[in-house]
Length: 325
Ligand SMILES: [Zn+2]
Image (tube, protein in one colour):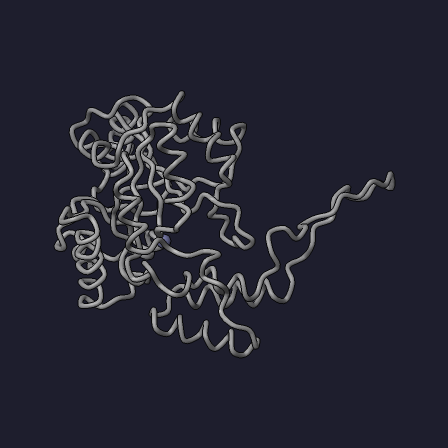
């Protein structure tokens, strides 16, 4: 005999399968950077291919409308909403023009402490200082009939191992400690910090231009891009309130409705973080947890699917699978 818990789970699964649901997509960059250890960039050519598929096989909605119709239970079939995290400048120079050509709306979540900063995000600085570029080969073909492998992969180098260990620790460090560590690494390697122009966030002027692009809206992605589950109530309030105030000023008094948690995995989001975001006046918040969104999804932990640098042949079946789940 099934327990009451199992019956409830089954009933929820059935309701979920029958209910209107949609998919929120998570992008970061539209670019082909020399360093991309977390595979967050989509090339402009692949982004165009993905937008063509979204135009024909999906029903793209602005995030606000997606959220309204999700809670009403009136999401159209194959509804999608596009979001971008961090606020990279290529969102203005590459993503926004492509979105405008395709007539697809999107929300850009901005890390407000990095707008107009004289340095890039810590993960880009660390990768640029330690890792070989993405143009370096990762494997070599072998054309021998000796029964052995036809491809040989390069093993991770000492630099990859050091990079991974440092990235793991920097991810959970405070913003000040992160910057101090990156500065110390640059000094110890004897070269200046990487040119922020390679991978920087939009400055305030560029954010105004982005917000003025039809179909583009701005949301907040905290001030310092720290793991909110590790922050004090006071720090959480600053992350939620100050990022909202800065974006409100940039948008001429219009406050953002949506927030996206930095990193956004379940372990990065605490109940106190959710409370701080709600108290600051946002009406929804996005996580980085892959699932479809439906009427019973938590509006303050909306799931999102991370989109990789896929061509049409990979993106089409992946999107279809996300709609089926
Ligand atoms: Zn982020």
